[in-house]
View 1 (cartoon, rainbow, N blue to C red):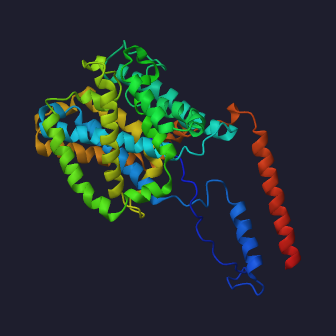
View 2 (spheres, rainbow, N blue to C red):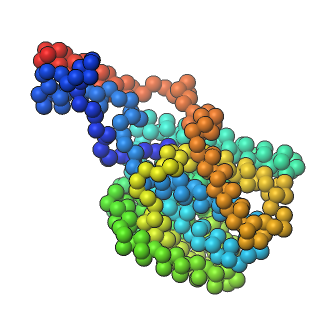
Length: 407
């Protein structure tokens, strides 16, 4: 899960309309130089969030990944009764979070310790973690009649682990940009974590460390790498690859512990010899990359009906957990007909529809106070940012003066 609110960098701005007079007729004096100055002025006067054209591919990928997350969670109460569903569950879990994390790393490439970026990290990641890490245990306490359910900010509950991981990964971004071989180093750390049973559950560090290579890979990637996997040849190859993955997963269901796909336990905690930890980390990393590349190859690059929903995936991610857990506590998944093929399809479609609604603009407006609080009152004014704004203001005034003189 990359921050849902991140925007791609380095893409061209949307073309500006030609200069016109107040009545809509092109002005009589519009040489190219004057036109360029006016375009520059219009671009500089835009607010920071405007004028940057979002890449539809990444919004589409985030939306489709979050749909797979919700569908996978809806399968958890049902999969024990179906080997086919368990196989599909393993395949989805092999790539849906790696895909999300790779995109998160890609959009974290520009992160540094600048004050405004640290402020966004706190308001967009740390504060939602505190709020939802408090809300989820309270929800369980009352919905599941569990008065002994504690609230602990050090032990992420259910979905909130990703916020902790994203916070830590982003803080370490300058380090990964500094070292010479970031990805091999991240893989080595993940392999060592898989044999360290004493790490414990604090901040879900096992997941933070074992998923770390995917984030670092995203940091190392460039736009052309995504274009490479979106070629027609890759889309064609992805069909037999996914078919083979499903067949292998079906074969491995009775032979393999699904816990390996969660990356939250060491090898010893999964009842395996210590040396299998590093082997499984490397094997799953390779399998996840292959399936993630196939997934990216199928993601459309043009604007679709769901493209705009890609900006609200954090909302869908954090909110759908209340519905899944609430349904589990209420016994909704106990109905016998839901454990048959048609029932499993119904649950999958319903989960996809619900998470889609949770990513929509009305829901985002309601819950923006928790997901994207401004909290200007909590931070000191950024002197560097104020200086940059003054400099931009002075440039605009100079441009205005030049245009008046040339007119």
